[in-house]
Image (cartoon, rainbow, N blue to C red; front, side, top):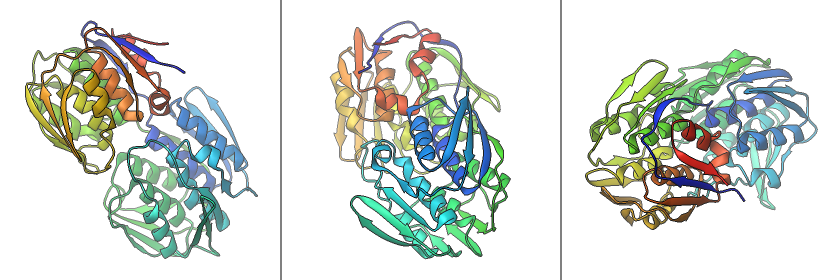
Length: 415
């Protein structure tokens, strides 16, 4: 099993390009199920989760091929209506085939999803919303069995903001009879990206980017071509890598406005940036202050930045209070950071970080995708050698992160 080995080295310096967004590519790939024919998606990252999605689409009678970072999905009517456990257990996003299958074929069987063990992420909001569009569900044998004669538009009000729920209902509603209104919809850039592709296919979605989405159902959709937005989480992770080493790193092929909550907090801590529409550069800073953050749905501070930001705060002057409001079990990286001599006190969903800490290299274990990145970032500043195991989590969501860091001057390798 692969490991990442990191040794403290020089300040990172140089330019690095962000890859396409994993969290946009996955729903876009599942949206191809809504229209027979050839779909072409550009800027698709090379990741384990993308591979899993290809395998699931192939089980559903699609042909998939990759030409570099372009994914071509040729969709044909499928007699298979089941997303099998062996694939779904590896990737929570597999639940996103539920809406398209119900919309196209009126039935679906999807195993209850897996993915990172960062806390309870129930799909009840997905199911409740689809029921309001006319679907009926039964859960048996670890599978969700859905059936509907024809989806009918309705008014959906989510109890809490749900990115996956918003995506699933969008993909179901575009082929439903009549109008669907989604209130308290997620506003992430990945939601906007999905809406833009669905509209290219012939959907009628309005108020894109707002918390109230309106969808006028259409009878059919047609394949199209689209370029996936840059990965804002990877871009922010690379910025933090430069910042924690006191380096000078420019991240290109990104959209800085997509992660302003992160850079605003870094400015509050004392960092300075040079920013353009498609790039952002963090300038060298010899010292910075601890700041408090609370994760929140977009445009708030993303939960996917919490672990990496915690690693950064171990080197800040003073204390930082980090509050995780999205997932109740997303502090598993704290104990691993403490193995590196980080001074962190976890209290339920709140962690108090006291810095600056003299981090010491040690063997650590990645517990989830973003924790993997957090431990690599900490290793960049820890004396001695840090070995991170279970990096298969990393490969689910970062495309060759260790190579990108090495090209910036990091002493990092994969064993």
